[in-house]
Image 1 (spheres, rainbow, N blue to C red):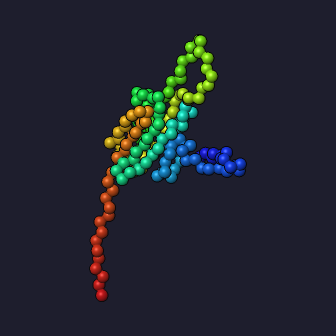
Image 2 (image 1 turned 180 degrees about the horizontal axis):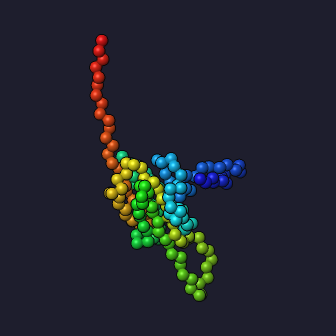
Length: 155
């Protein structure tokens, strides 16, 4: 769990940041202790910013990964319905005669994990990368609504 200080407005207030967790899991109320330690490692090249939206048909993840090629990004499913998105951006090589004035673009590895809900069809996940945006679509299983039967009331 992370608490982020607010720098706006002069008062120091704190806001809960659920995306600071190694595994973002809105559907499962458990700790991440059952995930192997190595899988929890994340690096600061980015806290790769990823949107997760749920539609009636699927869970859709979108990640802005400017400058990365699809060969530099991995999308994996792990045991326990965990979707893992990782990759690495290489740093630019410095030439002997280069004179850097500012370096703001980050480089290094990133790793984000999301526990998928039980209705996710993990056998039908697909991913595509277009213009630096990775889109991962996880279809949902149809949920059978319980059948209703009218019962007549006797006098």
